[in-house]
Image 1 (spheres, rainbow over the protein chains, first blue to last red):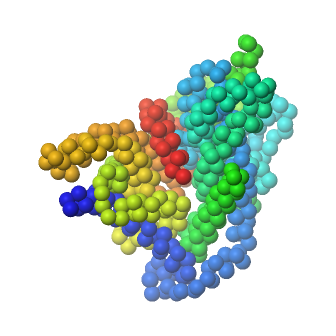
Image 2: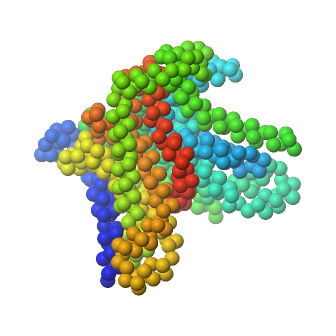
Image 3: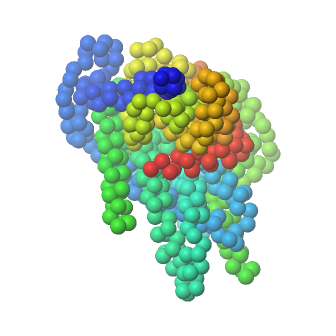
Length: 291
Length: 271
């Protein structure tokens, strides 16, 4: 049939590109993760050996991997809820009937999302400066002493979380805002007539109505936050005392600084498996929750 | 009533201050004299506004070259993405071929795989193709994307079949139908996809960092990250660099935000 031939003509270029530059590399990554591919194999493929699960075993025995996993988990655990709460608050404000200049505020809140990560990370590094930074200056105004944000291992990850929340909250805000607009006005009205106050309406009308949207948003945000890399690369170089080494940062160092490409592939796969498992858990939990 | 109105509006301005302060501070510091920002209390406005930092930036670093590199790469990435994804997205929505729906579902499941998993072998593939350290290498992952195909397909589903059938009965070829009927109706989603591709390419960091090691070929984000390591003390100079990096994308966003937000909505309902 004519249409069938034409259709393949339309999809083939994209499919070939995806196959060559995405699906083939993903499959190759799995194979690579069972080899000792290193700088010698880069020079001559003849030096390549299959090592079975050695990379994975070695990974589990590497303290820095556990450190990186812990750091990343801490970033996700702190950052995802904070980020979604900030998005929800901003969306509720924009949805408020008494709010003015909504279009203007929506654009302003969304602007950090489109900024280039590296450029704004450079800005925040100075904003978080212990002595001359605006953040400590503002905190000083309300009586909080200077915090060594990027130099103190206890504060380095919270500092990156603060930056990430600033950068990302506008994204989920837009999605939540659309979700808010699908909740029928009658529900709010009925609750009001029953004497529910604003907080009770939020708790019993708005949040249940938003549940499916919040689930999507939390899965997407979690997946994004697990891929933490450029923030520590620019702001802290993984320090102080490796407190901001993320899984991807660890992978980058292993792969492209030390050229342990087989080992780095194993790291990438472990990251993928963790993200995949957590997404499944979230879906299962929400299934039970909505039943 | 008036007080009820005051509270949410004050909160709106407070959040706006949080969102804008870093960017406004960047612009302000970029016009300060060198060293001025490193004092306490931090100055909010330049005492003697000067463009010296921008002059210094373009004179002493290769900033102009990086700007051209980034513009070239983002433009090429956008054109590639528009060509490959739009053709495929339309075919998945409107043309019948064997295994279409199964193939599409397979592509969607691939969305759960983070791009970084592919990066190490992709680097080796680029190496064997001899395109490490070239623009071609940077562009390879943005030729076709599952997200782009998905975005176009969802929009193309709304094209009425009767319109295409009528053209077929009139004897128009599939290529002709695509050019003169499909493309014009897809215009809004083309703008969305173009905005996404351009901004995505402009901001991309990890892949260009891996694939480009010749400093003359670097993109703005990679160059800025390097510069900021060398010039830690030069706050004013670095802020000028950030202004140069951010200005094009912020302007583009202001012009095309309608399309960008439309794409964001389409992307979030993929689940």
